[in-house]
Length: 275
Length: 275
Figure 1 (spheres, rainbow over the protein chains, first blue to last red):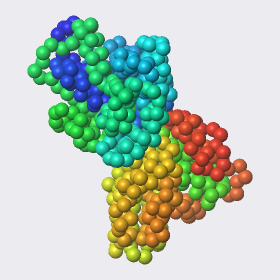
Figure 2 (figure 1 turned 90 degrees about the vertical axis):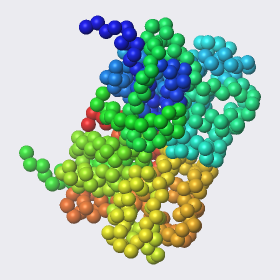
Figure 3 (figure 1 turned 45 degrees about the horizontal axis):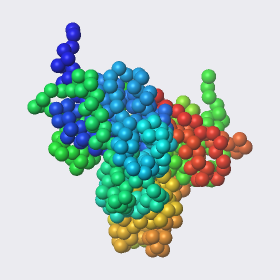
Figure 4 (figure 1 turned 30 degrees about the vertical axis):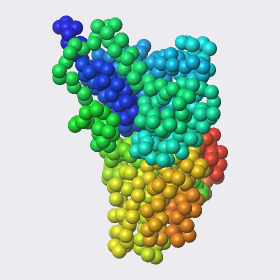
C-alpha cells in the first residue's frame, strides 16, 4: 500500500537528548514550527552522556533512533551536543531518514556573529574532546581560532536544580575565568543544558561576548530541511507532543513544565535497552 | 563432577557500584581480607544511580549480578548505598549466593556510636527517599531519631575531581547546614562516594559529630559471613583483583589508582546490557 505524501507530512519529528537539556531545542521547534508534531525521548536512565565514551554514545543513539522509528517519525533531531559530536556521522549513514544535530547550526551562527574570529565553545568532556565544533567552524572560516572548555559540572547543576543558585556562579567562575580573560568575542553554548544557565553566563562574561545558543539555529535548520524535502506539515490544528523517558518520569515532568510553554500532562517510561 | 570446597573458597568476591565510589568498600575488603580475590564492576555507562528510579536500580543490579556470576563469584557485596537501599531485598530472594549491602553495617555502627540517639544520614536521593537507613536504625534502636538529607551534587563533585576544591566546601555548606545546626552526634556517610569528601565534611561538622563510614563495617560483615559459611579463602599468595566497567575504562583507571593502595594495570570494558 502506497503511503500518501500528505500522510508522511503529518508524521512527527523525533527529538532526543540524554535528559531534559534537549527540551531547550524542542521548545525552539515548537515556536518556529508550530504545525509539526514532536516525539521527544530523554535517556534519563543513562544520563549524563558528557563524560561517557564515543562507543557507548553511538550505541545509545542507535537504540534511541530505533525506538523513535517505532513512533513513525519522519526526521530526527539529535538535541544533544555530545551525541551530535560523537554519533551523528555514524547514524546518518545507517538510517534512511533525515537526521540533524546541533553542531553545524551552532558553528554557522558563531561564524556569522564573530568579528574577531576568536570563538569560545563550552560543552561536555565528550563534545570538547571530539573537537567537532572546531572542525566545523574551521570548514566555514579557516582563519578562526577556537578555544574549547569542558564544563562537566554544569549538567548536574542544572539537573539537580542549582541553575539559579549562587553555587552556579562559583562553578561558572572556575570553568570560564580563562575564557573571560581571553579575547574571544563569541561563545557557543555547546550543550543543550547550558541555555538554562545562560543569563548567569552572560552576566559573568559581560557585553563584549555574544552568546550563541544552537537550539534556535537547529530549529531553523530543521525547517529548511523539511521544506527542501517537502516533508513540512501543513497547518495542523491538532499538533501533538509526546514525551518518553527511560527513567524517573515524574522528575522529568516537573522539569519539562518549567521549561516548556505549555503544560505537559503525560510522560511515558520505556525500557530503552529493548531497542 | 563435584566441586571441592577448597576450590569454592578460592573463588572471588563480586563487588559492584555505579562507578568508582564502591572502590572505597573494595579497599576495606583488600585491607581486612587480604587473602580474598575480588572481581569489581563499576557501571560507569549508567552512573549515577542516586537520582534514578527503584525499578531501574533493580534491573541494573540484576544484570550486574548475572555478569558477576559468569566470573564465578562465591559472594557479592553491593558496594553502593542506593542499590543496597533499593535492590538488596529483591536480589537476595532471586539469587542463590550470599549477597550483602552497606546499609545494615552502617546502621549498626551508628547505633553503637551514638550517645544522644540522634543520628544523621546523608546519601543520594534514592537512598534517602527509600528510608531504608531509618528503618534499619529503628529496628536496632527504636528510640533513635534519624535525620536524613539527600546530597545529589556530591557524586558529580567527586566523579569530576572536585573533592579537594573549595567548591566542595560551598556545596557541603548548602546541604549540611541544617544538620550542623541540629543536635545529632553521629552521621552516616550513606553513599560510597562520600568517604572521598570525609575530611571536609568532618572539618565542617566539627568534633561534636562522629562520622560513620559503612565501607569499613561492610568489609567486617563480609568477613563474618564468609567464616560462618566456611567460604573464607585460606592464605593465598596469588590474590587477584579484576576490574570491569561498562564505560570509560581509562578514566576509571586513573581514579582507581588514586584510591587503591596498589597499581591497577588492566580494566576491561564490557556491555552490561548483554546480561
